[in-house]
Image 1 (spheres, rainbow, N blue to C red):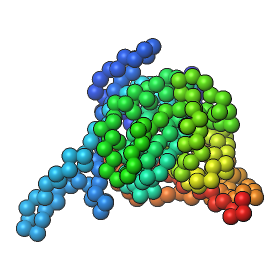
Image 2 (cartoon, rainbow, N blue to C red; image 1 turned 45 degrees about the horizontal axis):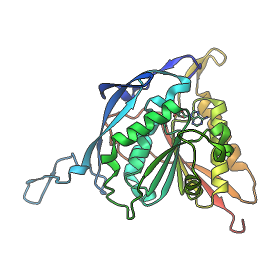
Image 3 (cartoon, helix red, strand yellow; image 1 turned 180 degrees about the vertical axis):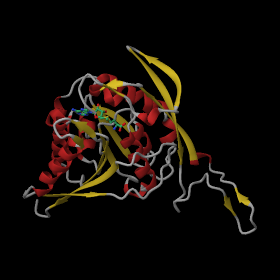
Image 4 (cartoon, helix red, strand yellow; image 1 turned 135 degrees about the vertical axis):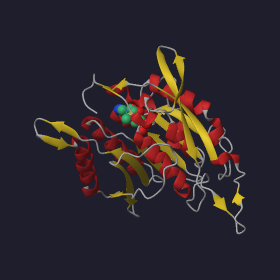
Length: 311
Ligand SMILES: C[S@@+](CC[C@H](N)C(=O)[O-])C[C@H]1O[C@@H](n2cnc3c(N)ncnc32)[C@H](O)[C@@H]1O
């Protein structure tokens, strides 16, 4: 992604479009994403399975292949990229679907949630999800998508103790992450939300690495949340290493990705009495549940915070 005024289009939507959804000031579209839920063995339920007699075993669980309808824009400027679905969201959703035990029954915070797709998938297994982003247009669209897809998470197959509102949409600006208490407007944090935030177990974020200033603000937000809240020791981040040819380098380079790696290196080198961060890459050895070919340069990262016992 490049200049602020440039228009960008995510190829995730190609072939999924089903209609126009005119909402308020904007004309948006709706895309259909078909999710194939896999059995715990890792086998796709759509694969033909035969029993000992050679008869086809028909899956009878109607929840195993479902459709998520996502309202989004087709093409946006960089400041409005949250109104599209990006490959990082699909990678994170795949990871959650194939590693549901890492999220089951937990409270999860999504940073830069955009259209809400990842939070919708998360809410199937997590106890509670806080989906955050900035700007009323993105947050309203996200909330509409969450309301549109209750069938995905209403009947939780795995979680005991349902929340009345399993996904909440709230504003969390990485540039002002220490000002959450002072938020105002429709997506402001109530006292109850702030208590929930303090109890989050896991953070997730998809495709949030594209501008150096925002990357620094994003990492600073992670640092603040993971160091401040004692339950929160794990974060998963999906990134795409995007290459651009630059005249300065006379080569194809990935400056945004390089900046992310160097900021993370600095974070993990920090010495603090509270604890230390550790980053590692997660192998992408889990199948895709969407009809979308993963771009080869997608990466998934695990950032952990090891808290010192005395702190
Ligand atoms: C490329 S989009 C990714 C959206 C979504 N996670 C996905 O993968 O489809 C980047 C997201 O970061 C959000 N974002 C940008 N600046 C932000 C900030 N200062 N604070 C919080 N979120 C921000 C954008 O609104 C957008 O939703």
